[in-house]
Length: 203
Image 1 (tube, rainbow, N blue to C red):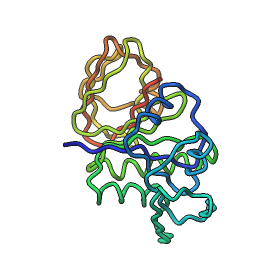
Image 2 (cartoon, one colour):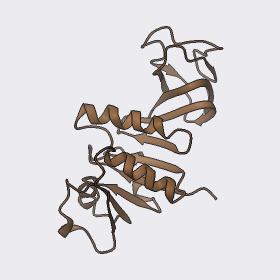
Image 3 (tube, rainbow, N blue to C red):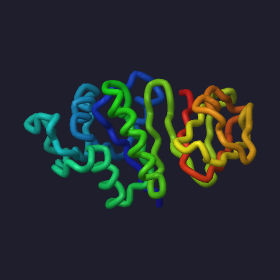
């Protein structure tokens, strides 16, 4: 049985109704250090608070929340949380609050997610996009005409898509912007790639 959790980072508070619905319906909420403040603002309760805990006043943490302190400075707090999920066999992650704020941390969060692509299914949610991470062959679902953008960190990545307005067939993205602003024809599409691919779906 697949186990899932919502991870809440210390970024922008979500305003998108779809993102808020995912958060309010979560069976398990794991706050990443200062992400606990976001949960407090929404008057919600987290099951776990994890990180080096340098961004949170622990005296304000509810007694129902389990506190896991990890002071290892060789990993950031998102890595700590994802490693915890691996250890607890939580394999499907919705990541909220990992965008907005510092641009360097936003990019680092995307790169960290790619490092875990072999073991975790991670969806990074902003108010504008669902950011997914694909390798091998993967199917995605969304409404017809949804805007889709593909970004590869390796220019030699071989990509095949099915179900997009501009499909790729055993092709490389010829430039950094080649995969931007595509769209879905129906309510699903498939991507196959030799190396990890970042998939942006407009919410």
